[in-house]
Length: 191
Image (cartoon, rainbow, N blue to C red; front, side):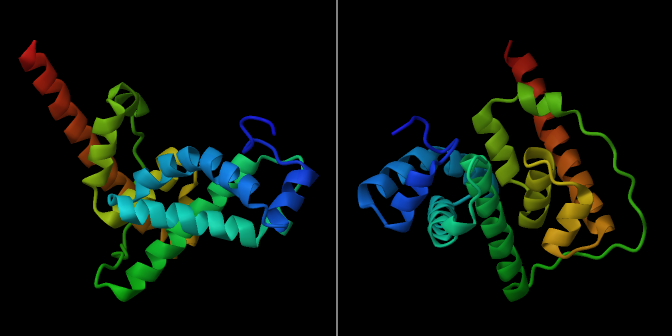
């Protein structure tokens, strides 16, 4: 079997999935797990919720493997399944909780965010900063900044207005910029 197997699947690989070849499925899960978990940790603070999202996504991949197109990226496909799982789970929880998106009546300008600030932060610090964002702002920021969703795509996926997406992006940027600035000040003081 090729390594890493998640980049492309052959027709034989798909047949092995459909036949539920346990050895192959375990190898596929183990090879896919780090990739899926690297996304899940950006969206979920809790290890149990991260694992649930990864496992649900893997199960959906098994269920819908017949929809996978040969010669396309398995990595991109399973990541799309995971993102959709995270979005669906967020919408389910949003309907059940008192946390609601605030619909804004005025347009909010989208200011540019200096992504170099994020690149200069340590990964663990960045993850900590993301985890401090409110859940709605966190999912909006992740979809936009990390997963390259457009504002319109986020609006449609989360069923919120474009202005609300912009508000969450603005709030996230402001919060992250402040946290990174504080970190830089602390670094300079420690020198």
